[in-house]
Length: 309
Image (cartoon, rainbow, N blue to C red; front, side, top):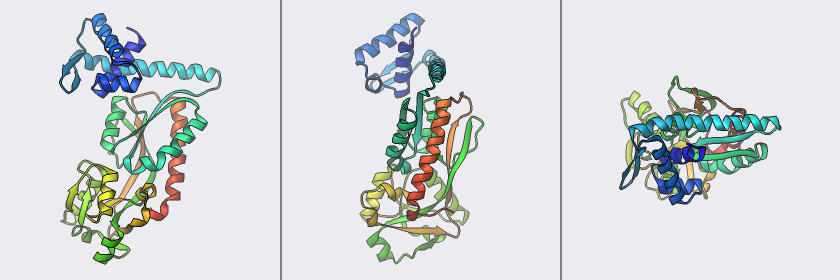
């Protein structure tokens, strides 16, 4: 058993496909398949059940995956410790970003991380809070930016910013509906909304706050894609309920109008989370500081699209 075999196995297990894993690792698929097969022969275990849609872990494979992630993590720790001997922070840093911030943050965050941590390997993954939580718990992510994560003993969270969601509509649609700059929450229930499906954090917040006043949202389109939501809003098919800074990354922000929701506001917390069960490296600590600084700067520069509570 060698590290290359373990890395190959872990990546196939995480992606559920030899083809996707080969692409991610930059390894020819026959080579990847051979490495995994050699591992199975050496361990006298079948690690994957092959299906028409990819592969799934066997019981032995699931057990090895937990150990394999730990082994790779310890190797990264060792490399980082050795890097500190020559005054360099190295190792791997994987960060999960929500779609509402990914387009806004990816370039400035990457530039800042490359400037301060040139010897670290960076992975940025876009995903809703639910998938990012799974990534943290599975060891695929070192840290993630999340909205309203529930308290859990296996997570360490810290507040980045509190934000109020706003109603976003097309210019013509807002004018036709004669909406003002502020909208009572109760009136939100009467508007055609384009929302992501549950358990998206924004959707859960909208549902929960309307339920408190015995109302529910009028959802005309349910779609789990931020860009698609905003495009449909621009076409006048409905309204979105998102953080105002979401418009900071669209091509034509002037095509939209934001309306404050109040009485009460739809307040959400933007948090930085990491696993409480894994060692936190010096490289990851440095990356966490950089993430905080970049997010604070980006949100301040786009504060005119929305508002803090």
